[in-house]
Image (cartoon, rainbow, N blue to C red; front, side):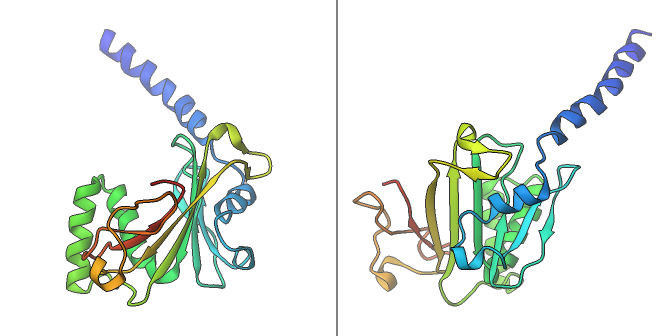
Length: 197
């Protein structure tokens, strides 16, 4: 009897918990406005945008007309972080989201995507491909307008299999804001430029 009472209370609270979680989901127009914050001004209106539906699932909120894909802020994580990247990176990024949904951790995702890039299952761009990231604190975000004040930019340029020898870049920055090469020689090789050292 006690067990049935506990189960009954748990089942009764599920809708309340679900409702609280979905209250974090902002209107589509606000999500889109926030998602494109990192993009160059000329590219914002034509970017494809992913955001969250009423159930908290990541979905396409707007189909795009240019070469950028933007990802809205995850309402279930602390802080604000949005990004836009070249469509050429979409197979790689989409696979990462699939693996995250399957519960894979960072190292598992890295290993699986590395094998799939090597086999040709995931095509990686041959030319450098840009990713723009804009991030900041929750208290600086206006949920009614989609604006983030005091945010910071980070730029990531994917250059698969690039090395310090092929680029002339160091693998660690030696000055604030300077570009450097992360994950050199791998499918994830990328140039980092950001407000850090």
